[in-house]
Every structure is written in C-alpha cells, then in structure tokens.
Length: 300
Length: 266
Image (cartoon, rainbow over all chains, first blue to last red; front, side, top):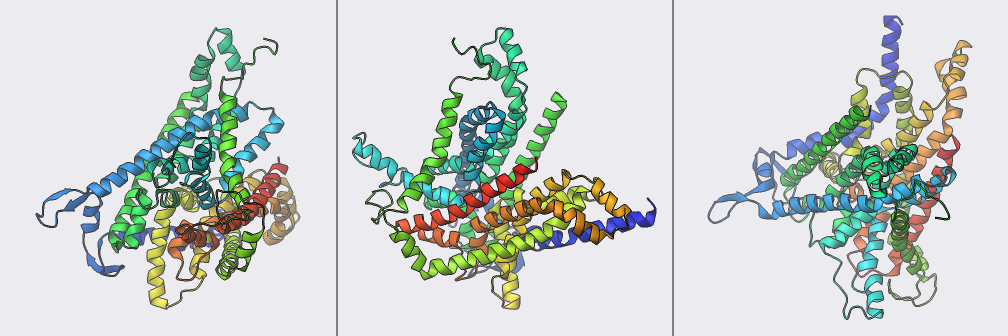
C-alpha cells in the first residue's frame, strides 16, 4: 500500500471511531480526570468545592486527626469499611465459586444440544434488573418475609431471625446477583474439555476426587480466575445491594462514597475514595492479566 | 453398576447445580407471585388479584418514570448503536493498528471502571455544566446511558463482523462499488442480526441502570429503577412487585430474543 493509501485508511478508521470516542470521552473517561482534580480541592460548606488546593481529602481516606488532642491516627471508621468491602467481596467470590463450579461442570457435561438451554437459564437472571433481584432477596429474608414465615410456621423458631441489614444479608445478596458471572467463564473453559484425559486418569486408578483435583480443576483454572475477578470487582464497588440489604447500617465502599456527596458534603473526600476504589480494582485487574498470562505460558 | 461407570460424573455436582437453579429462580418467582396478591403483604398470600397492577398503572409517578425510562433507553440505544457500528467496522477489518489498545480500553472502560466511580465522576462533571449553562434536562441522563451502553452494543456487532466472509465485499469493490454503496448493499444486510442484538442489549442495560441514573438525575427525573429504589425505604406493598414483574418481563423477552438471534448465526 502506498503512503497516501495508508494515510487515507488511517484517517477513515479514526473517523469511524470518532463518534464512539467522543461520547465515551464526554460521559465516561473525561470526567474521571475531573474527579482526580476534585480530590485535591477543599470541600465547600454546602457540597461542591472551593477552588483551593489541599491534600486533606487524600489524608482523610485512611487517617484522621483528633479534634481535641490533634493527634493523628488511622481513621478506624473508614478502615473498617474498606475491610468489610474487601472481606465481603472475597467471600462472595468464594461462595459463588463453591456453587458456580459444580453448576458450570454440570452444564458442560450435558449433551451438546441441551447445553445452550441450560446456559440460557443462567444468563436470564444475569440480564434482569440487579435492583429487582436484590429486592427479591430482601423479600425473602425480611422479618416478615418468606423464610422467617416458613420457619415460624414449622415451629423451628419462636421469633423471626434478624437477617436483613446484616453483613450476612449483603453477602447473600451479592452472591445471588453475581453468581452468573462465575458460571459463565468456568463453563467457557470446561465446554471444550477433552474427557479422554479424565478417562486416562481413571485408567491409572485415580479416585474421582483426585481426577477432579489433578485433571479437571487445573484445566478449568483460567475460567475460575476470570470468574473470581468478574465477581470480585463489581462486589467491591457494589452500591445497590449493600444499600438495600445493609440498610445504611452495614456500609460498603460504594455507600461511603455516596455519603460524601449526600449528607457528608465532602466532595473531595468522595473523589479521593472513588479513586482509591478504582486503584484497588485496577490492581486486581492487573493481577488477573498476569495470572491469565502465566496460565497461557504454562499450558501453551 | 447397571449404567456403567460414567467418567463425567462427579458426586454431588448435579445436586449442587440443581440447588443453584432453584436458588436463582425461587426469589424471582416468589416476587412475581406476590405481585398478584390481593392483600397488602408481600409475604402472606390472600388470594389472586390484579389490583397492584392497576394501582401501579394509575400512579402518576410510575407513569412519568416509565415514560422517562423508555425515552432514555430508546435514545441511549440509538446513540450507542450508531456509535458502535462504525467503531466495530474500524476495529475488526484491518487487524491491529497504532492506538488499538487505547481504543479497546476506551470502549470497554465502562465495563472495567466500577459504576459508582463513573457515577461520581458524572455527578461532578454534569454539576459543573448545569451551573454553567443552566440546562437541567434529560440530555445528561441520555448521554451518560449512551456511554455505558456502547460496549454492550459493540460486542455483538464486532462478533458478527468477525464471523463474516470478506469475499462478498471484495467482489462488490471489484465491481467498482463505492465504499458507502458496498457498506449499504453488502455489509449492512449481513450485519443486521448483530446490530439488532447489540441494540437489544443496550436497551436492557439502559432500562435496568440504577447507580449512574441515581447520581446523574436532577430533581424529578426518576426512572423506574430509581423510583423503586426510593420506594424500598418505605413500607413495601406489592405495587413494587408489580412494577418489578413488568420490568422483568421486558428484560426476559429481549434476552431470549437476543439468545436466539445470536445463536442462529452459528
């Protein structure tokens, strides 16, 4: 191709990309830069910001100064919310794995023509409204909800168990809404699985458990890693599920951020917390890309 | 062992899988059932009735929110699809190019960056524009929805393009078809299923969004999901179930249609 032709091809390519990039820069990536700027400003009295530089917001992400003694220490309230977010997200990933792996395996071992229908059953909940699914869990576990009513009717308990507005409720809700994200990639890695390898394992007198652990699991590992990331990342930034099921008592990072733009009236702190969340997510994604890369090298 | 030794079987896996399907659907099924409850409770069954659907239908806030949701989703779908088609054409045909990684990261950014972070960013950015221009209309919600719908519209279109045979287009170009004519007469007819699938995904995604809408909306701009989120703070009546069921029905129909549309191409 001549230089002129190459230039023309390049120009038409960027012309084709222009509308999408314009919308994305305007309403997705561009505003992130403004968040960065805001995180270095001073909060205004009634929300918004005052345009004077200050590192205070970043300081108060994890530290705080005692109002009376002026002693500097860790901001326990924030740290406990960080810890809860990370803990619950990891537990969500684990819980979805425990249920998702056997489910993905089950679907992958169905006759080929039936697999699609089983997968459709996994995909439908995934594409339905997250708020509605969270609401469905809320109705299930509230004090006068289905679970408590059933247990009371059966005489197993004398008074309703408080499940709503606990960490357990958030964990249950997140595992419920993100389960399909674990099943999809594991299924993708098991779908083309060569079962003669399993047969070879049994021929060598391996037990079922051993075959599962030494043959099936290593080959499903890329899917498991992908699934864990797909579940961990949205769990960490979850806002709706902890708001509805945690009821403002069990805050997660998303709710803490929202608080700064609402009652907290500290936009710079909200901006700094958002970027902290973004940084944690990016670290997780980079670790994932590395892990996925290593797997590819190992299995060629 | 009458049935022989099934090498694929793993003890307990089928049981867990069945439990999973039950867990996935039971809460939703209960939610739908109680939307038909004659009583005011969402847990005690008092007989079948349409009353909550009527209540929701006559609720002016619900009407306004429904119209708003549909207007935003329609515009966002249109804009996102119109952006995604040329973007998919530019990123599939000629292999990788300089800036490919950048473009790919940009398009998929809404999938990687946590929604709450984008929501906060848009809240700040649009607040600045609102102050500067005084305009507080639906445009902000439409453009915000368009942006996060782009990757969802883009993926099926790209997948369709990658599976397409280039020889027909080459033949058309050999016959001196102009690029636009080749696109309209040859590429586009083959691309339609992908475009339709992408548009449907975008529509569902826009219709279901809570977080970004909650942060971007001005006063009195509730969509159905944010209206429901507000209602959950109060005593919940089966009216919310009725609205949920209606929204679920739309999503399920579109997703099943998407499923069969994208399956046919194999």
